[in-house]
Amino acid sequence: MIIYRAYKTELKLNNRQRVICKKHAGCARFAYNWGLKRKIDVFVKTGSSPSAIDLHKELNRLKQTEFSWMYEVSKCAPQEALNNLENAFKQFFRRIKNGQLCAFPRFKSRKKRIGSFRLTGVIRVFNDSIQLPRLGRLRLKEHGYLPPESDHVHILSATISEKAGRWFVSLQVQEEINPVKNTGPMVGVDIGIHRLATLSDGTSFNNRRPLARFERKLKRIQRALSRKQKRSQNRLKTKLALQKLHARIANIRRDAIHQVTSKLTKSKSVIVIEDLCVQGMRKNQTLAKAVSDVGFAEFCRQLEYKTQWYGSQLVLAPRFFPSSKRCSRCGYVKTELSSGRIYTCGQCGLVLDRDINASKNLLLVAVGFTETINACYETGSDSSLEQCSSMIQEPNSELPGSHRIRKTERIISSTVLTPEREP
Figure 1 (spheres, rainbow, N blue to C red):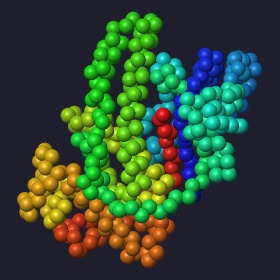
Figure 2: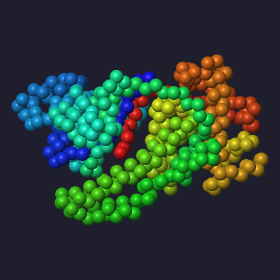
Figure 3: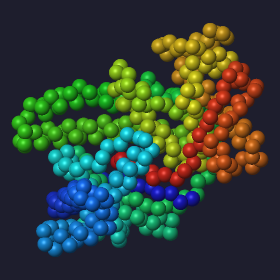
Figure 4: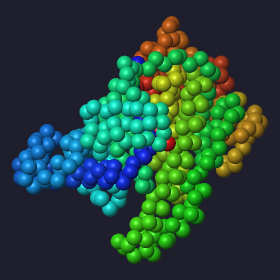
């Protein structure tokens, strides 16, 4: 099985290397803004916009006269920036064609952040360093993490980026893996605000809430930044401190999600989660900040690609499946759900934690999913999952109250570009 994966780790640069990296990032930003302006001007005059190849040829001619300073950096930086611009326009028109809301590609500002640039060509990875075109050999803070070129790993590109004063390299590789089929138990996972994840076997993972933890410090630094004089050195120092705190909050959130998703995909064969409407949940002014602090989309995205690595399966329950209102014992569905953390059934008298009750109901979805797979396909192999990617499944008639439920499951089984790991 061939996947596209990205390895991200921090660089240990000296002053000279920092300067050359800033030059590359500035050149990439300039090429992107120049290409966007040229596309707009040509479209206004002729009604059609030039492609990335045409812009690259025109920029090469201008490098000999107007932009001679671009010879100080690698040719990959402006070339890949123009390719990114081309992809931005393709995504813009694709979303417009599908009727989705999408913003027109905007110009990049150097006031917000330094930016990033991508390099291709000969890239060599060593235990404690990486060799890149035009940049030379750069030291790594983490040794032995980046994979070297081999028969099973092919390096495609390297992206250098800056965040809160720290420089990172993201290595995109084409990797061949042999996932072993996971034989662990099935589990229903209820994700929420009070607890990050609650499993149907009673296990729960606490939500670290990094934003709520550092909210007072965040307000203090933001207040100090607003009082600093613009374009002063003290303002730049305070701005860097604010960026570092935001980066720390994001890293804590991402690390917590990585630990939970890795543990689930390595030990469970079938994982069932709800298809939550996060945008609708964020419209609630009382819960908007808490919902954003959890990271529901990141949780689902990590489960999506890690299930492929470790041979497990991910099932999305329908968005309107009453997992919280339904009794996991008798199947009685409440019309309204109270705000308490305890679920009390008015028919059979079940008293259970609300999150555990919801996860047990999601486990019933996994049971019905596996029984339908085995009934439709004798082999029950992984190849049958793609054939069952969209289907109406009849629930198990032996489950109490299951005659009220008709559920549509969606199997996630596609090769995706996995995200970079934050150190």
